[in-house]
Image 1: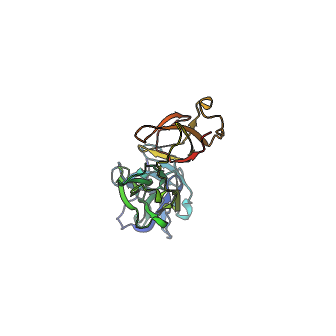
Image 2: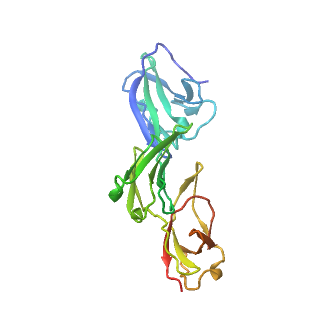
Image 3: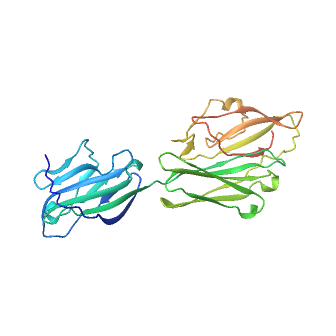
Length: 312
């Protein structure tokens, strides 16, 4: 049994907010200056999924740290009982651990003064810039989408449109998840005219949880080139992304190259960063893909920069 001297209650002294990044360690301060006799330090918390003022560990002079109920070895006692210091190091806190943490000193004759801290976890966004290559036309379509996924607090997403200012518009959306994070995405929309092709746009993502990040791309419009033969060859540049968000899942992108170079034009360079596509015009002027010399381990939208090659 642990010892507790409760003579009278005193209001908790607010030590301050403890703000840490997701996956890092938090220091929960607990110290008092007094000449009173200290018999025990009690730590309690009020977090989601737990009863209010849940006592999760105690510290005594002879036995040291003792867990209540289930042991949680993420908590480490880094203070000094003789100095009336019950400070804890909390490793790898999660969003479920956010809330109020209070240390209570059992003093004689001073009663049970306490120190309270509010733990807040910041989560940096998972960022991604998705590009589209629409066919040239007069209907408004998405040109690029910039996403800051699963961040806390929510990230700000804005565009630097450069020479396209006033020629495209943005559409901002956000989704709040049950764990307290927010996904924000902004889409640039405009009519895919060839005058927009190749123009640089930048997506600026700002968040309290990370440094400002700038993603950029060139708007691509698939123009209707005149064809003078039955076939036309195109090269397609694949832009790799270190990580993506697809249906709420994060993963590494990878490419599985099929053995199809023998069916591609022999003059095309076998550069693993490029793929070859053979296209031919149909009677109505549309383009039909005949050969696609690659496959992806993950299905998601990638920018394809189409550039016509001279037909040999």
